[in-house]
Image 1 (cartoon, rainbow, N blue to C red):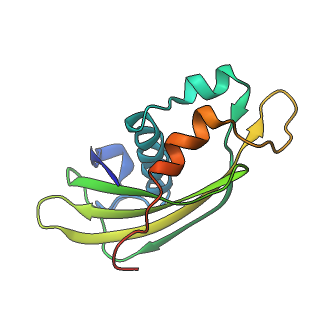
Image 2 (cartoon, rainbow, N blue to C red):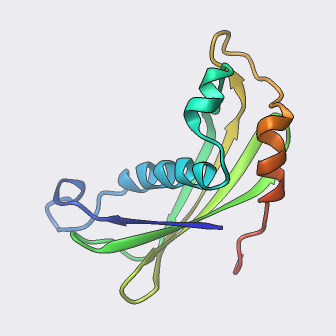
Length: 139
């Protein structure tokens, strides 16, 4: 698991002072990129080898609202991995009181950027990812 923290910025809120629901997907994406960086894989290094990982499916369950200036913690788990795809799960928690704000999931496919075709990821990326696969608690 990797935990990333973000402040809810004013422009991410609506007229009610609540973070707009679309921001959750941006925060999940940022947390996913930081998760990979934490295990030694950068998006740049994958792109240098013509690999990208577009979203195939995304979901979010909203429990409580995040508000302007809340510090949120995105706990990110790589829960499933094959050479062709990966699945991440997320827990979004308000850092001040550990209230669960949302949970989410993304499924990404590995794809060759140059052709747009699904590909099998090499050991260079697969092995460190495989070592970090774990189930998210409280599922």
